[in-house]
Amino acid sequence: MIALLVIGLTPPGCAVTPTQGDIASPPPPAAMTIQRLDSLVRERGQSVKREGAVWQFRYEGVAVVCIADTKSDRMRLVSPIIALEKMSGLQLQRTMQANFHSALDARYAVRGGILYAAYIHPLSPLQDDQVRSGLFQVTNLVKSFGTTYQSRGLYFGRPEGAAKHTPHGPSTDI
Image 1 (cartoon, helix red, strand yellow):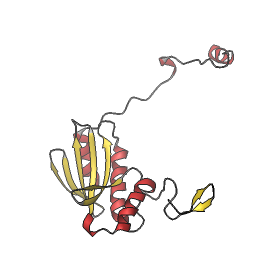
Image 2 (cartoon, rainbow, N blue to C red):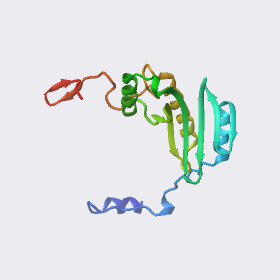
Image 3 (tube, one colour):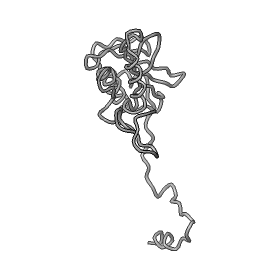
Image 4 (spheres, rainbow, N blue to C red):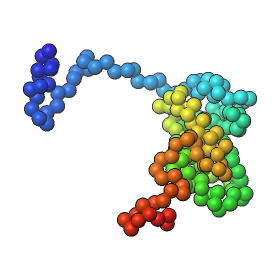
């Protein structure tokens, strides 16, 4: 009752902050470990092969590699899609547009002349649901390459093909 009166009498612009004992906060999530990551990969993946902190497996028919590095505090889920030399200019353009609008947390990336779907995240704050989401998004980027180029059924911003509005009216120019 007194707390309500104090808050009601607080002058505008002055904040009353509760003490630690007033609010119960949830404990911080445990840092991701190699052992927990191994369990998550084995829970979702098929034909899992592990060497150190590198896992090769299949998920929904898609080849995936998970790489964890505790020293750099990073984790990657990657899946090869196509050799760059086999891609058309339009396909390359669409992958870059997807990275802006429809790839969301996973991205198209290039290494060694190969286009990959990749999900990259700091290892220690990584949560179980983020690993599952990253795996889902990487496999969706692989499966949707050449069609919708999306990691989920969502778009951030204007989907490709929608008219861009400018002060002079709609335009599809960049």
